[in-house]
Image (cartoon, rainbow over all chains, first blue to last red; front, side, top):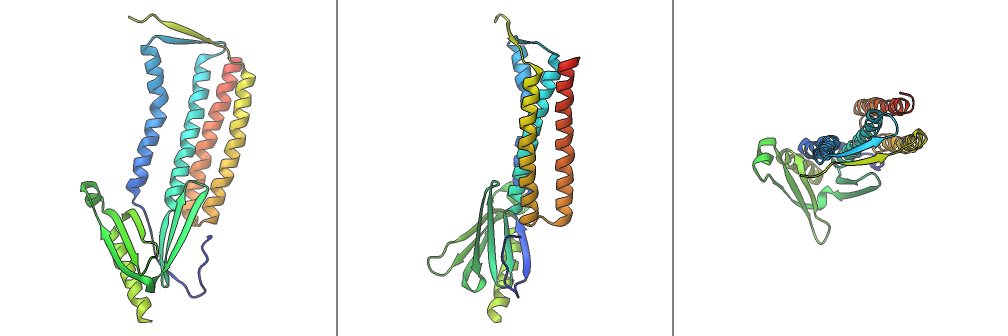
Length: 171
Length: 76
């Protein structure tokens, strides 16, 4: 899994960004699948015609299949990026895995006993309706503040994190 | 009103086959990267099987479509 857990460390909760984040990207991909159709219609409207040496329909289909393959692979890159971008709450720490594209991955972890304050924020009509928002985790001293945006049900995640901190500090 | 413009395009089938070959090589490389990431970085087993199947079915269909298109361009 590429995250080294300690022997007695247990995963309590895993949380990702809301599916709406993915939905926005998929909408863009749908637009891209239709883009060649718009370009074709535009060329027709401007009366720009191409004369091909072979079967024109076959060539257009070849180009369109190639375009769809590129868009399809872009969708998979977006999904992989979305899925591997995760917050993991264990009984000992909070792990922030930040996947950026296919070739950049940052993993930061924070011991639960160092967390001072956890705040959640839901902002806007869509976020309120679909229950997504941000969580800010503040630590003592000058350590990095953990922030995750557009997370699923931030209040529930805050509660899970606070529960984990409480259990961790009482042990 | 604009006058119509006609652009002649002469593309030989061998160029299309070359493009297809390059696409196949790039696609295999990207597939390897996806499968590695999904396995190594922990996509859950049932989700991995679903996404992998979907990825290979759709990409294979598109590649087969490209191959048939070149065939039609060349022979029909």
